[in-house]
Image: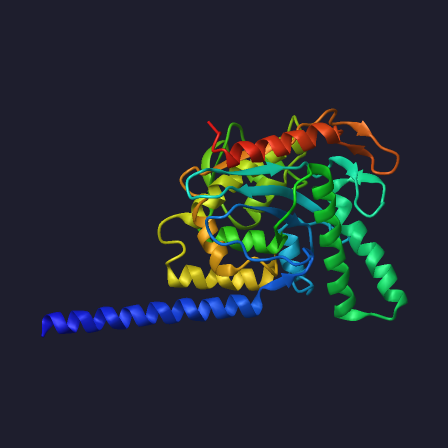
Length: 347
């Protein structure tokens, strides 16, 4: 009788777990904002190589274009809304085939002075999204398109412009795309219980709102956002901020793949809620496959690099001070890094 009861209990638990996973999957598939910015995007089976463009969007709206509450924006120290949609974090993530070779995440400084796709001249790369959006919005408005449809199609054009700009710069085809806004980042760090960081010295920065003591600590919410956004007071400015973002991303990936994170029903439910409100994925990035691909990024299986740069104080005609790059050197560097990852040649 005891054995029969145990088997029955285990079967019931299994059914509940399966039901929970199915329910969450349906919610994600129904609720996550999908993008068609990558034409003919197709799912990548777990174990096959792919390259994804990951961006953090400085947006005052959620993924569907709805305005964020004023009290939340105040807590984020987001500053005035000037209508800009800058991508202040840009990472090219290459995951090689197999299950053991480390993935490589290559950061592109937001102020890198590059040729913007579509013949839009040379500007800081973080403006590519907005420039593509603005051009499309003007054309669509002339066709009489307004409201949410104008916003949706404008953003799609912005994503496509950024993707094409990165592809032209690096010579690498982008297979997948993921976009996370300010509020989504804040809620994600809170849902994961914070991310461990370590500061060599105390920091107080009025621009980002960061106020932390020296030493190891855990940050989440608006404090975590301030940690990765700070660039004032850093000797290397935006380049130092990239190093900080990379260290934070490694901790975040570890939190996501920690034992229990993706199997805790309450935490998983919260992550699904965040994803459906603040994340944009290309239509070909299957959610089930994404979960399996994320698990590969644990146990140190993620290497960070930054594209080579020249002067950090390049004076430009219209964009103020930018980071100078050599496009040929960037292209060679990125392709070498991906080739090394595919050959499992990282030390």
